[in-house]
Length: 224
Image (cartoon, rainbow, N blue to C red; front, side, top):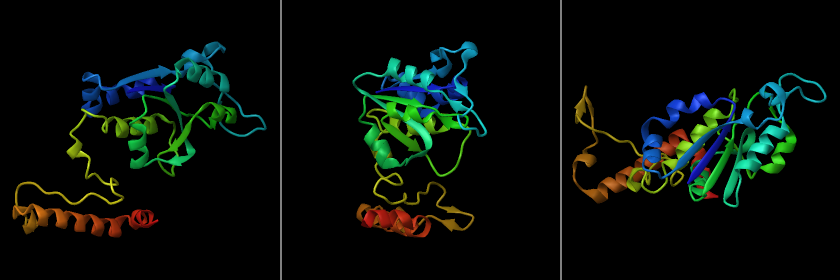
């Protein structure tokens, strides 16, 4: 897989690309991630990529030309162009699993007051990572990239994510490690029993309990 991230702040990705699972995936050449400075595509003086909005209003708006030029330069027949923005569909694990099958993702990081509306004619998906406002699209781009890359074959063991939260519209079951008794808080006996069928039943029961308690909306989605 290839991922191109177009941003005004390339330096924000330095730690992201050099630590943990993302670094491992890069070292194994399972994925290629390019961080591209949007300003390198502007035809305007002094690296200008934004301007004041027509009709008035506060803030600055990202201009069409730099963004569209970047898309057109990077895009090929296998590309999917993603715009990070509050108006997009809310991101979830199902979308991450869908995106893992794409060969090339181009992620455009928004900033300032937003995009010139016409940019939307040149993208395939608009994605939001939640109902709140960030100063830019760099953190959403990292979240999308991380959630997709970890699912790629060879990055982590499949067993490590098959039972993750949201995999079956349920939250993950509770997990424990040594010691068995920590200040009177004990590991459930069933997990020490060695009975794999009972452990499986217990974990599913706990997934349902935790989901009902903390995210009942997920159960409503499951029943639709």
